[in-house]
Length: 419
Length: 82
Image (cartoon, chains in turn orange, blue):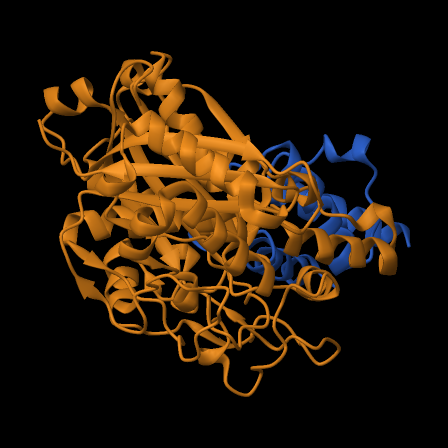
């Protein structure tokens, strides 16, 4: 970021429907494997949506003791899993370093926080009265508690905030965390997102927005098909993602592993409609333009775009138009654009940060993950979407897009780190 | 239900419902110090006692519950009143 200290990424963590851990998730993503299946967490018989992306291999007690796990909603449990991996990878440990801890903080994004606990406790209240609401109801539901719990677990005593910009939330978290470091308020910030939305109330509620596909209940792995002509809505998933962001000098001094540099952070609002993107993609385009300009990356230097690519009719066509508007026809036709949501499904507030991780891994590995289930071209989606198979190619500057209900647009530009 | 039965049942509740460490749940263990049950945990404990023993314990009487053994005392006293 060109408005202060340089900010690099020194640790990555993820829990996704593709696996527990960044390596497991990345391996599946670059192998073109879908993480979508029939929902097992709750009984879907009363709603039309039967499929989602569940983190079936995640065991909360691998990351926290049983007593602590009990008081948390699953969205916070998933986050602790991701932060645990990211912190271990970074080599940072503040458990006995109070001075360092004061300079280390956290920004977390979530779309809907502890919605599973919310549903459960409202039912308790309805059936047994307010006197039976758990004392942990509020503390597990509120959207900032993943950050609160993680600060306690990892002794992060610096700035700690939470972002609520729907499906753009954890992309904002990364940019906001970097800005806190750039202006000198912290040396290290854990940034990420988490979501555990698979309950009847939230899947049923999203189904009512008509944003979720109901056409692939018998073939879940084919359901998330961004940019394909037969796409018919997104697939909801749970998951968490965390990045350790660090002042470059701080990272160099301690000999930290440096995975990438956050070079640009662009934001805009559509100011148009609560769920639909502004026609023409001009809102999204503004976020991309700002991020690229801040990074000093011209269209001809952009190597890869990790798209928001939700698999809804509106998003994918509009995002395509926005990319063409920003990059120009020539560069847009050349730059590979893929949506890893084709495999992870849409992890809502956790999506932006997991896709930032995919983008960083793409830079590190010189490998663009594919858009799977891409079979039938849509005239409105006419870019190179890296169909169905990962592609080896040189990637040094890459962008990740995230857009949220409410018209929030966020783009992040990462660059491979070189001295 | 005699004292031994209440003790056994309460220990099960504390481990299974409140997630406390079975090895630490002795009759002498203090909720505050030994079991790290905080103010929210006390509320949960009172609800668990109500659910499992059918006794209502007002917040002000919760102050008499410092140890697991004292919780047994309170439950037995309440059951005796019924």
